[in-house]
Length: 381
Image 1 (cartoon, helix red, strand yellow):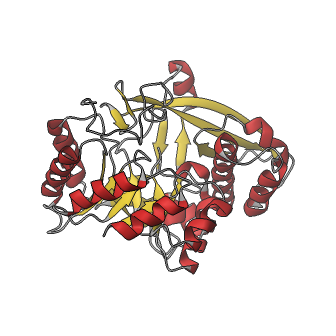
Image 2 (spheres, rainbow, N blue to C red):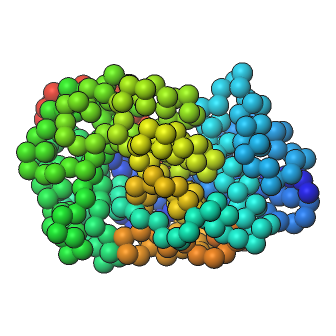
Image 3 (cartoon, rainbow, N blue to C red):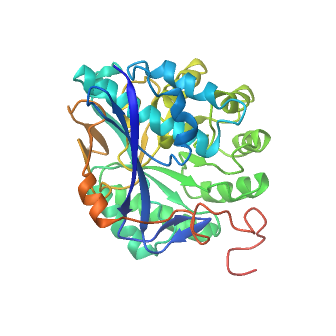
């Protein structure tokens, strides 16, 4: 049995609302979802979701090999690009190929990946995270009411420019989710928009009114000292790591006690998540995967003992994608389909010729010029 090739296509996620954060907003609410399909000589194919523009660079490490050797192939992919780096888009290609390999492994075993990895419970606790930076207050409340109807009692707000607005919106979300809990968990994501002192001041102001569960990415992703300063300066836990790639990038944060909750980007793959989860467990730290279309890493999250909550960004699947999972009771209930439970309608996607963009200048994936340098609330400078 061997890997023989791959196919790549792109569909879209239609959010039906503007989406974004402190860095920017995509007003159309339409974003691309790249899909990778790994082929084998026995006809079993694996699906991975996420950016994989550098797949040609890492595919030679896969071609001709047995797809069941997932962790060995993960290391082979990293070794194949060790001189040219395995961060950014290269690491993304490795992660998406890794998803597809786990999908194949599950299909060959006739088991969903969550069961293959040893999970005893198919339910994955989660929290609502609607990429809500582009919504006005009324739209925000309407959206989180739909999450409350699915049983959610925890949510994460995007913000970071106007502390008064952030407090008002957090309190509103708390009121909406109080139907499911007398004390909903509230998280806040600044998406690297602050300096360390701005972070402490902003979060401290929020904490005068709200018992914040965690503050996420308060400073730049690589700033160990800055994360440590925020951890020491506020009551809330500091969560970060979604943009870190490889255990070598997590080690200094753990050594400095600079992160209280380790996060991993779902698009970096299942093997990466499992390894970071083990690192976190060795230091009695919880782990939380950052959401992505289809929630493929939820299978791995079900299998680790220190998983705290899975970010869930959308209640609907991308166009042409069917998922064997249900979002209910405040989390993800995984199904019994072998592999990751992702089915791709290639004909529908091809006929529609889907397109969308994350990296438009006004969107959240492009860092604004004044990020971390604003003296007053946005629009008043």
